[in-house]
Length: 406
Ligand code: NAD
Image (cartoon, rainbow, N blue to C red; front, side, top):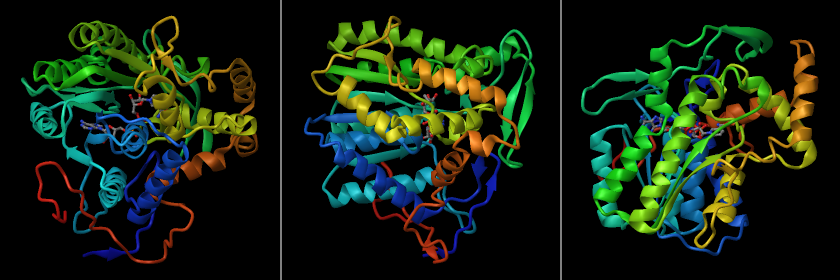
């Protein structure tokens, strides 16, 4: 037992603390969104790689609470320590497991490095018990990858390719519109980012599951990508991370052929819309872009969080019997409402005018800030932040004793 009053300790694009009850309330709200979707279809077993926050968490919740799937997630989260809260993803999953248990659903987690051979083997062992997988969601957003055979470490970078980038950015600490200058990536930085965020590890997972005969007939896999607007192109889509995403998309085509031949299934990349997550907050122009985007999409009634996007992904593209409609490059486009020409031309017009003096009026920065705080369980309606809360919440993990308190 460790009851504490937990305060936010936000440092730029991260909070050093997470509020357990706030994270739990976030999960209950997302599960409510899933329930309201009125899903009646069923999926047998779903594996989500990157399952504790953002798009992967939303995928696991839709699979488990919407489609009644036996859901296995892989993530990398920190347990609570004597003087430290756990990371938000830990508390998210602790609550998701609790809800699933209460309803007799199966939701299990492997907390460890998804790139490692050990975690892949643990996953294989767990799936022998849960049954072959019908759907594999690949939703890792990782800063680095350690080669499981050689121990070499590759770091992912967010840099432009070819020439130095200078453009509008946002200082989350000082709440000011600034200018960011980022040097062009070296060849090594480009290659290393592809190693981390490209398709190699996705392919390793699918090849392993095929080899172990753990993919059900008709099994599908979907990995997440982003394209985004012209104004972030130099730093995102045309930069190191975009290069990695191109590799992910090419890998998708290869896996599609492999899965088609082996189990009559398929592989897709889904281009999702920009949402407030820990990964997106770290990209220089994105918090400011998202603040403007949120304002325009809320005005149009088209605003979606990760959970609404994933409800739509499963319903319209990934549900049993549905053949996904794709763009000319074979990609699922969940970013259609973000990329609507009227939205993008208005974003671009506002972008030109943004300054420290006017960004609050011209964007939904208040909405962005709230969503950002909520990632860590703060500013969640109905939570009593003055009351001590149990920070030592357990997360039952595959391979650990069920009632273990960590
Ligand atoms: P996120 O930071 O919220 O989640 C990342 C997940 O990966 C977490 O569950 C984390 O625990 C897990 N993870 C990281 N390193 C790991 C490791 N070594 N081993 C196991 N798990 C690990 O990120 P997100 O924004 O939801 O991004 C997920 C995917 O969606 C990414 O491919 C991203 O490019 C894509 N995407 C994001 C956005 C956006 O705006 N956030 C938009 C479109 C696509």
